[in-house]
Amino acid sequence: MPSSLKGIERFFERGGDGQTLPFKLSALFSSYGYKKYRMSRFEEYSLYAENFDFLAGSNVITFGGEGGKLLALRPDVTLSIAKNSKATKENGEKVYYHESVYRLSRGNLGYEEIDQMGVENIGEVDLLAIAEQAELILKSLALFSGEYSLDVSHSGLVHGMVSQLGLSAEAKAKVYECIKRKSVHAFAELMEREGADQDAAAKVRRMIELSGPIDEVLPELGALIMGEEAADAYVQLMALSHEAARMEGGDRLRLDLSVFNHLDYYNGVMFNGYIRECPKAVIVGGEYDKLLEKMGKNVQALGFAINLGAAPAIHRGVADIALLYDESDNVYEVLEQANKLREKGKSVIVSKTRVPAVKTYAYTDGTLQEVK
Amino acid sequence: MLNIALPKGRLGEKAYNLLEKIGYKCEEFDSGKRKLVFTDEKNGVSYFWVKPSDVAIYVERGAADVGVVGKDILIEQDPDVYELEDLKMGICRMAVAAKKDFVDDTDKVLRVATKFVNVARAYYEGQGRQIDIIKLNGSIELAPILGLSDVIVDIVETGATLKENNLEVKEVIFPVSARLIAGKAAYRFKNEEIERLLMQVREVLHDKD
Image 1 (cartoon, each protein chain N blue to C red):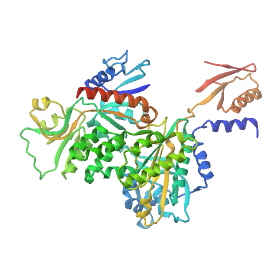
Image 2 (tube, rainbow over the protein chains, first blue to last red):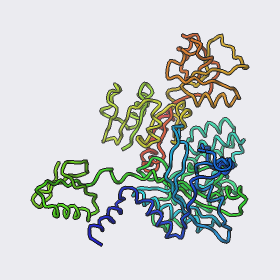
Image 3 (tube, rainbow over the protein chains, first blue to last red):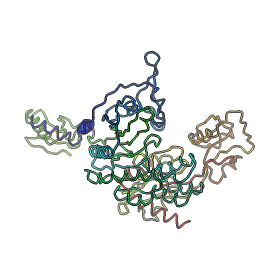
Image 4 (cartoon, chains in turn orange, red):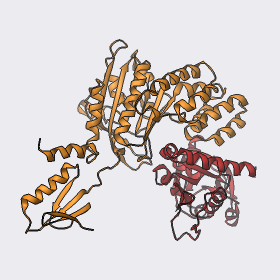
């Protein structure tokens, strides 16, 4: 391989122009034996209409198809994969996808196309499956950024603890809202209004506040646990924490019960992955057996979706270096100088006139001089 | 460095006074509002003056780590942020107001003038009432006076403006006060700084109580 082409590999290693992330993620998922799943851009609308809750109220773009069928531009990939899955508990399926999904943006500011990758593991969800999923998410996050954190929660824990408050469905919904927003003040007011058991309320209140490295937070959480459902979930989190301690990046695993993704569907661990460069979670996932159950399939499922649009722009839209030349310069030498810089993984634009670049050098008499 | 978005106006100044008291002083702070960004390296804080209705957007999108915003705006915009504390300042009410002699004809679609479209929609949906929302951006009180609407949904502090215009509060929808909010990624990557600020704010609020 010509040495300057090796520079391209270095350029990619630095993040390239942001287009390399899907390739790296594909390689990561393939290395775990996940098979690429490709699907049609369209799906029958009935699939989404039947599972509207799962889409969390996302509006769907529909249009008339052949034979009067109502079709939709896919707002979600998991639903299609779950519908078409032939997995059983004994013969599971591990797939990944890279697709566009179409949703109404927040604030109804029109539809947006979201570049999404994701992983689905359908079959049996045991500790190994959960630990592998956490490991895959940690590795995926590390491909995004040097500063990342993976927050974990458990729907059984949240649900189990809240059910101990003995509240109406309406009041419970308000409690979930307080947990999601980390609003202990609103929770305290609500408990006072509802006349909830003070001891139980104090425990849930502390649960809302807890946030930090999973191994540090779990012991305190353990002292708050009420009821069997929460206790079972706690055991699962303990086991995950134990496994994570031995994983690369396992120290980035945090426990935060405000992480929840539709409690109606997620029934086990829930994950949200964050990177410093993006204000929202770039990875969202968890165990979603209820969706499969609703589809009449006796299997469990675990998965996560990655919002690729959140990848930080490592490439700044301009070349790293502009190399200026004039007509008197030797063409071979100019090209050679540019290639030497490319070997170092830099992007180099050769130009006669000044163009936008991070740094500009002039090639004069065989040497490079920086132009300020 | 903690980036804090403050709402321009009296509420922002009150919030700054509270933060200054607990160690987040900014030497060059100026409530004259011509300058929009104030930084104090020593105290590790940077303040932005932002339009009150934009504070939550700055925090949600990560331009600011924390912010101070009214509950009215949080309910209207439903931003994806943490609402960490009720600062118990900027206290007012979200209310339905109308002319003093207004009698609601439940047989008709109610015309509602408001800046808070989502609040009004949710409130009347909860009552099963059909309404015609008239979105206004200011001087909401004028709408019922000129016959543009039957009622208004707006924040009411003392009720003086309503009284001067022969209007009165008919129903209170929810109480409003300023909240301390934090961005979700900021809460993770600046956790210690945000928790420290929150703890100190709570101490001051507790002392006040």
